[in-house]
Length: 361
Image (tube, rainbow, N blue to C red; front, side, top):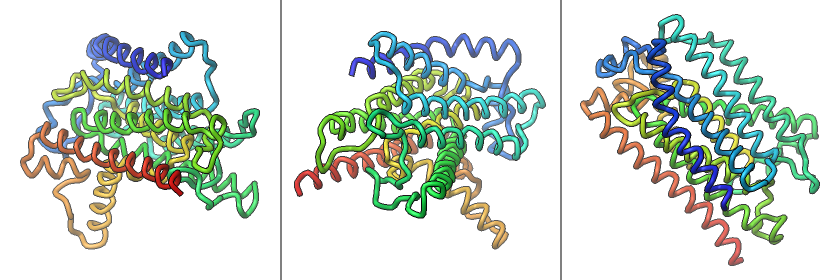
């Protein structure tokens, strides 16, 4: 528990006190956000606000994780390092995208194929390593079995090991891409995506702690969790939680800095990595319910327009629909945070109820 607290505390302090210095550097060099002309007119006042703040989040997480392990003399684990690799790798892709936007002074960054290639290289590397790094108990950070609250009987490796590995890589890529795009689409109002991620990382901190106490390697039994390195995954989640808290201080309305694609892709990747390594892949649909709703609003809008020529919403993603209806930005953000919190509460309730129900059998 000390490791978890140190990781969260160091990441919080780092993000809180390093962000102002980073803002000054960005302002000095004129690295500001380019705002689309077809967006809500209220956003035009945000033109020039420093972006790429996700770099601070990534740095704070890595610092918090490293300091926590150095102080407690606990060695890092493959599970924790792989989630951090996924976060940092996707963050780098997002950074290149943000940098391209700033350099060219336009709202379009990397070309679609460049962004896809970068995300694919990171995601595939993560998936392959997650299946090929067993510990002394022959547990790997990930499993070819589809998971909900724990691994289900549905095993992608049923047709064979090679086919199973390929299917797992595809499945992991879909989860990573969905989570990254979900956070990216949500990052449209000051503090919205950062606050929503806070709820999810809080949940994964609790899940990791609980799984650690009920781990099959510690307390074998019918309801134990066959998850490798759950405590270290809680450390990673806690570091992410602390970094988001510190960054939110400066990202809340009116935002002094935006996380950019650097942050949204990194946080989305971290969420997907935690879902895969804690064996809660399908539970993520509930934990990240707000991200799912916002992503669906874009899919519905695009599908409806292509099929019927009509738009369902005034504008997508969903938060901009409510902006055009006259809702204030802070009102939308707070209400969406409430929705995100409710989804997380329901997911944690399902997670705990499954254990209680199984323990009573």
